[in-house]
Image (cartoon, rainbow, N blue to C red; front, side, top):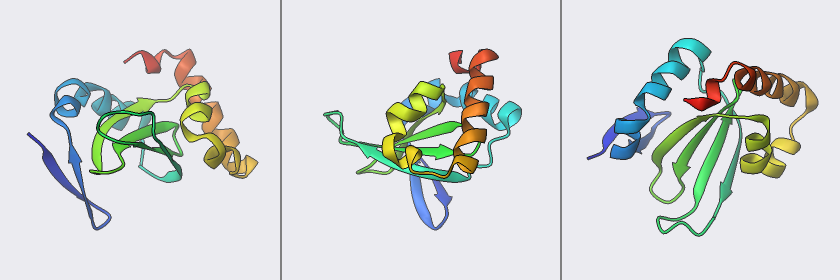
Length: 119
């Protein structure tokens, strides 16, 4: 039911939902956006989900990686719109320097204009 991947000396498990329904988006992100997984900030939000809080990790290319914060299971990747970045990352993003924030927001706007977020 879960696939295990070794990343940076800790284990990530992807849910079956991720594997079945999100693999085409992940392929698109890897091939077109060429995201290199450089994480610039992280935020944990408890929205009362039955499986616990979610962890949101933002990459330099404007991709938000979503994990279950308790199990560390990879839920999905979002090709983020600018508003999603502020919503999911909050102060963690706002507190970054402008030279880090500006190119990420430019990428998010570009992805939105190209319709990448509709995948």
